[in-house]
Image 1 (tube, rainbow over the protein chains, first blue to last red):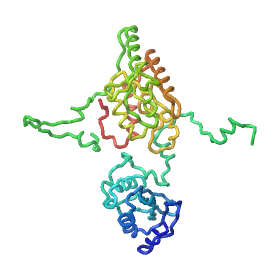
Image 2: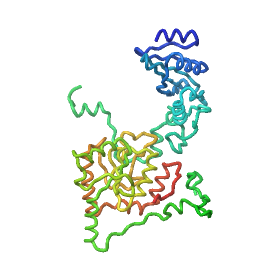
Image 3: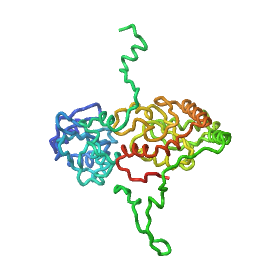
Image 4: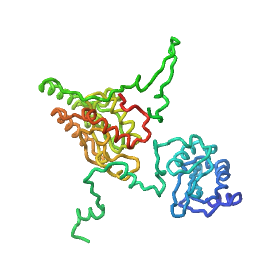
Length: 176
Length: 217
């Protein structure tokens, strides 16, 4: 991983390398360097497989984090590239020309987080939700409990118990 | 007509093989416009009783799994549980089935397909809600996308509690349903017909893109 990081450093200006374990590392990348770096990793470094493309909502920082996880089967290495985007009108360059499967991930992110990927195939079509009118549901400012209570009727009589407390009462009520 | 209707449901002109052009209005020509009606029982109680006995002995399940509980339905057909001895079998199409098992959580997207399938089943038909999710939402009580009470949308004859219930519980539920049918209490289809407006209003409240006929028969 270290040698890969060195060779990346010669061409690009990646952020700090975080090694999770042997063969899995993450680095933060500037937005405009992402596409050339993905292309370089795919064509020259043997990272031919896009494992996943997902997002994290950093509500407090006002940012979305996109994670592109790539895999090199031969060397059994995985590398994750992180890109931070501003949360307002989030939009990112599409990579469906590098990996056609990315179009599906991008369509999902468009629906669940509201991140736009202009020119990605069928990106504005409904993916899982049909006729959704509210905020994208994976955004952290979407209150799913409130939405469920307003939309679906409750059946009275439902009780909620704290699992730890309940099991203590059942199994060893006289111990601390 | 709803402007969001699917393209294939809109009125269109079709040219027949003999060269004649004619207008097709799919909602009127392909589907039944009339709302479902309540089916009255047989003219004497003893005949109705005979009918109910016969109905109870032929429980044909629609092969439609909605949630994780679908996996519990499959072992019923294996020699270990052998549901055939109770007159239970799985069927591939709604037209041949009379029992719909909602097997676990039901998302709004699936609910639309469930309604279509349920309405295509022939009377008399029964619905079993399997697992907590169909009763009060279960562990999906705060989900943006799964319904909480199945009986708001379909007439439920019987619930089986558990998360998930094992195949034994499911089999016990089916036997319970049989005794309900024999007692003449399996009136789900009539309940649906009687409260059709109420069910439709509930269904349309959660399904925002209603792009199908009101009654899919």
